[in-house]
Image (cartoon, rainbow, N blue to C red; front, side):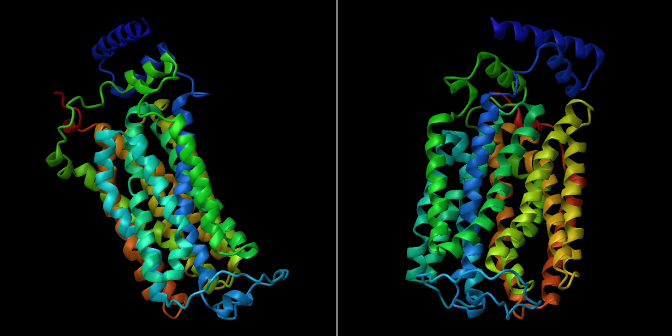
Length: 497
């Protein structure tokens, strides 16, 4: 009876809006004003957002903890003694901490080997992006994401053994971790295509994907403390345990769609499915590959995603090294300060999601204007402050401030190009994200290698070059997306059988 009443109401409102020639956004807002949306509190769609946030916390914890552990894994007296006489800037005076007799192995890896180890993850990650989007649409996203993260957890637990066997074994393990994590974002995008009402997308997706920043914020300082009080091997064991706990919760609490969830209220289920009824494709397994790969809005997202990730991955993998080798922070200070940029990124990402949906729902701004505005702020802002960071010299406070502002402003793009796949083709959002993330993974593969090659002498001028390259790529991506981005469902994405 609820479904029948809502359909009748929707039809009557459609007729009313057609007669008044109101745009789709106003039609939907008018509809919600008559039939109240299912409340967010205690809803299963927001429960999914927070549990997937935990999942991406695990994903990024397992991805970045090696960046901190690497400092303690190297056979370098400067790292172990804590005096940092090898850093470019004077070391910081801080209260001495008791020395620990760690039993974990250390290794004689040169900078080139380190670059390949840090970048090897992305060689596996790039392989499963498009297959992940396709498999999630074909067989369901729940188990694909679940087993993808579980596989990554298992190989993370094997990291200390692989490191003892040699760098080639460690590279192989990191590649396997990348293969597991490669399906996570396409799978989650596929799930949000059927779980996120259009005017709640920014809110739900920013909560969900902010887990990536939270994982970075927590794992960087915590990894530093674990390395100090225990040893670097426990970094992988402890975060692996977090991953196993997440998999158990995911198994019993998540379902592929509102229609298959046994505990969801009828009101929430009808609200979600009705809000999406004109956006999802009903043509089964006939994927319009030609239309997808020739879509101009999709390629705008590809360029923006690639450009943003160049800066993001450069900082993600090399910021601990910059803190240690240039600014002279200890491994404990290193972890805490390296996490600050991602804390700001997480906060602004969540806030941007709230503001973006407010502008679309209440202020009636078009989706494309909101996405472009947030992309410009989230890409040009980081470029400016990243370049500025290279000119702070040994002014530690200013350097950390600029790096934090750069990464924080990047969080605004979470409500820009990052979720635009769901705006232009929700039925194929997983495949679209797989395509864009395939290109966006390339910076993670080559960025650390190029950066380490450019900073062999670890001078400030060399790091300025690294920052200039990242900023220029960011500006180019923002320009292309501003010119070619779109915010409405594309015709090829809504054809029916």
